[in-house]
Amino acid sequence: MVEITPRQKKILFLTIEEYIKTTQPVSSLKLSQKYNFNVSSATIRNEMVKLAKKGLLFRLYSSSGGVPTDKGYLLFVEEFVKNLKPCKDLFEELEEIKKDISNLLNFSQNLARILNEFSSSLVLNYLAEKDLLWEEGWRNILLEPEFADRNCLKKFIKFVEETEKKIEDIFLREPPGSFKVFVGKENPILKCEEFGMIISRIRIPKTKKGSCLVFLGPKRMPYKKSLRAIYTLFEFLKKT
Image (cartoon, rainbow, N blue to C red; front, side, top):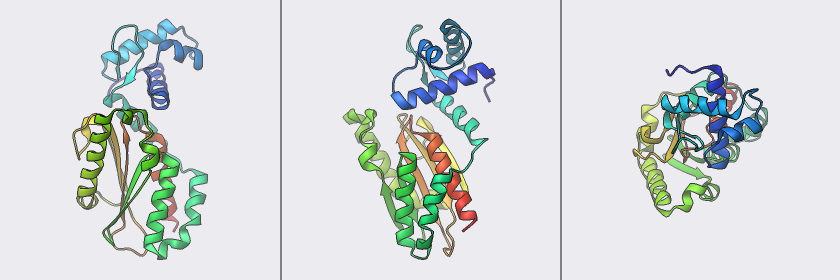
């Protein structure tokens, strides 16, 4: 694990959150104006230089803003996972479809829809019991700025298609009640540096096999919302 100071961690994580929202490199000036660091933008810039040397941020040139690297995203995710908590609103939405658990098809389709609405990621829900796959979120995911580039869009469509083909293998490989996060070239489906993926296998009451959930998006996908959605679902299913 890379050793960084608490201030560097704060700068890195806020840079990632800003970049996820805006898709634009994040400057030290923007961070100093928007957040309370009690230090000058020059000090923040120096810290960003150190983060770049550790491979956690990328800066095109010395005066440019910072963009998170794969390594930076993974550290961000690792830290967030330590303090995961369920979302009350999402838990309540899941309660509303609880009655459909006896109807696996309705439950699985509604589950994919709810998780997509909460996470803003493209959600694939593979019901192993029936060998059926639902996908929710194409309309919104295609509006992401990255996909204005036709080559990037073509790569993403291929990435999703390969995930569809291999989803049964993914399901069999993952232990129930677990999740894994892949960023950029770490993706096990295609070594595409532009995308992110979260894989989770869940237990569903009254089924022998359960489901496999896959959250997909550009590399700056909303990891925190997606992971919180998965954790809330885990907590919901424990009580179902």
